[in-house]
Image (tube, rainbow, N blue to C red; front, top):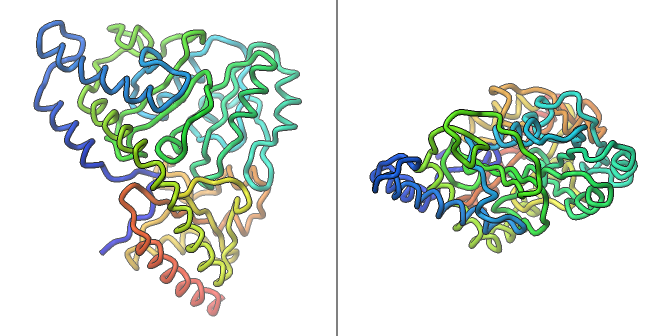
Length: 363
């Protein structure tokens, strides 16, 4: 039986989300229609809007704009906010970095945390207001960024703060009010193809998709009512399970202790990390070889972000951390989901260790 440990890429649909999805499809109706079927669809959308907002302090249901996912939400934030300069961390998702390639990049420390002193110096000198974008949790390393301190710096110098919380939702409490927040359903057991951008009412935002005026004119297009309903259900259950999810840090720590015995280096080990993610390397044993050999043993992991059309390529995140090439070339990511078992992680550690020892002997 295959062991799936790539939940940061996507995680299976939760039963509650599947039930909400199927019920909404069975009900039918376009949420923009005024008849009874349309009103029923609209009610499902508004229920989900309230569920999503409840997970994000500082935001009201009216602040939630439903989108097709995290990439669209990041694009809407980075392109839509009508202020001057963009400043982004060097470890952002490519849907941020490629959307504003001209943006000033804020450096990170060797542990993968935004360098607060450098960030404050840069933000103090930036024309006001600027848009600052920093992810809450890095998708490759699991390192939690100091969003509270960054938000304070942004307020001090009069800048807007956008946070990509795709990898944070359902893993840590989103307790810091920010100006814009990106979410995605399929990372927490909701449907694929659904996300949200939460925008506080003081932020000037210009629509990037125009047409019928849905989502208060900020994102036109027929609402995916079934997907949105599934998203709301997944958010509600993920919030209820936050304490159990946090407890999985003990699983991760035992896994890392096991693979360190075979020579693994844990990346971002001393930083604050989410419980479900371990990024590690064994210099001299290339990532693609590890991926193939693990896959042959029925273990599915990742070499980093899954948003690059299936490529195994150098990680800009690890490069920004200043890690040497042999570490970058050999990095893997293991990530747990809502339905993961500790036994799966233990089996992965055993299989990886056996393969590593074989690779070392051959090397």
